[in-house]
Image (tube, rainbow, N blue to C red):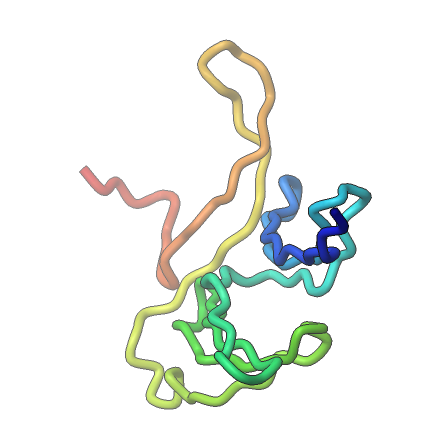
Length: 124
């Protein structure tokens, strides 16, 4: 019995840069194909019932979630909202850095700092 070749939409994250994105894979195995990868946090895409259109959100630490649409190729993410128009939320900076974990081994971490962060100021 032949079964149809099924396609899977997979999400992934780069463990060095923390960029997120989507890949297209197959139930039959093989290497997944990268569709999009960006310095954003994406929501799970929702597919339209009768069209090759997906709706999802994408946000960064500096920008709140915007609604995005795309087709099944994910080549172009089109912004369809303007949630940041009024800049309602405080912004900050995000980066990666080396840290020392409890076993004294080096590790990579995401560092989030508020916009007016002063490392000399005691926050206790």
